[in-house]
Image (cartoon, rainbow, N blue to C red):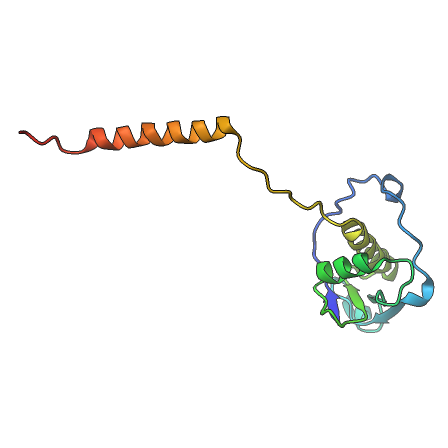
Length: 156
């Protein structure tokens, strides 16, 4: 089971909210499990040791019917999960507020799903153009002439 911890990075959504992204499929509730634990880090005095504000969000993605097999493979790779792992665990404990930690955990899961939704475009190798070959050879000739001019002149 791979755990995604608090990263401290800013929100890459540019403040546009969830509506700016393409629609993601609805994840059925039976594939998500929330656990709350203590202590969460951050300020809070003595009370922080008595409240369970840390959030552990488990996503059982291997059996989730709304994700394609390719999406599951990319999701596991992005989360650093082993090929045979069934779950991805997201931990959130930056805040002393349970609500904020829950929102953060679900936001990170959403970002991970958005990031892995599409397969990256495959690079098609291309041949260099004739002009680029000629430029490269001309550059090599100039460099060679420069180096030749630096050598010691032999007197005959």
